[in-house]
Length: 335
Image 1 (cartoon, rainbow, N blue to C red):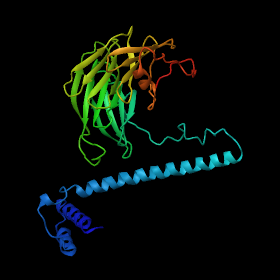
Image 2 (cartoon, rainbow, N blue to C red):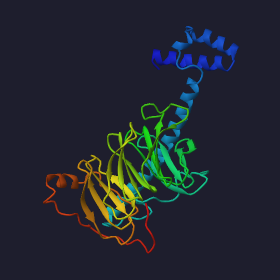
Image 3 (cartoon, one colour):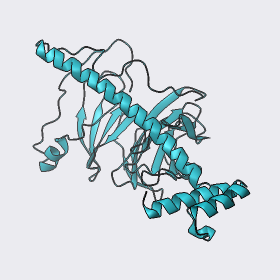
Image 4 (cartoon, rainbow, N blue to C red):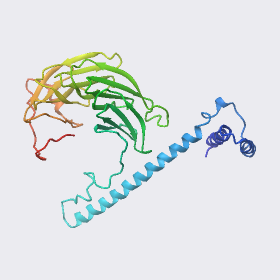
């Protein structure tokens, strides 16, 4: 340890002994360590500094064990692939493939208290946000295996939730026709902050029916929501005002996705049509048809070239076509 680190460690230990009324040990430690007594304001956050450091060490130790387990699995897969290559086999065993989840599961979350409607990982921290049918929002710490936040934020089922890119804000939408915005007290730069992880910040009202989908724009200041009332709305987080309403749908909207650069958005609708909108112009660009029933889920390729092609000239841009079709069964497919 450097001299500075050693002094901080000694100060933290002295603080711990003093705060827990170990008077004799405290004075003996001060004498033997030759630690100069300082004002409490100069010491690293009084009292719980040592506990925080210890908790952080335990979390890091669990994370290291998980990573070591993943490394062993990857080494096993790599060995299998090299053997397959030597034997001139192209197929990869399902048991050895890392492309699909496989048993046993790494984690199991218990105590959710109801049917979950949506789960989303935090962009930076090992947190998993879980939405419930009873309107309860839960934030699960995947390292400590405990809930860091749990509260009923809506009066009806939470249909969707989304973190902004920084992870500082979390938006939820519900069957109660409202959108809630929560602010996080913990970020990737300050992962050790304790206390209430998320606090309600704003409530957005304006939709006339269930709000099914929600997504953040890249700037972290705007939110896009989709509702069964057939509209897409763009909201400003700071003012809670609706800055744009897109209304050209014959039925409800079940899901909305925003292109990473924020140039266009895609909506999946009850009528089986996927609609592409220019967000800056507020104009419908394309209607992609092919599904015979409600479109429940959407995803956008992170490096898609479609936005650039559309921006070059709307009149000459060809309508998008389906590249393929996969039939996974006779029942509904939801993601």
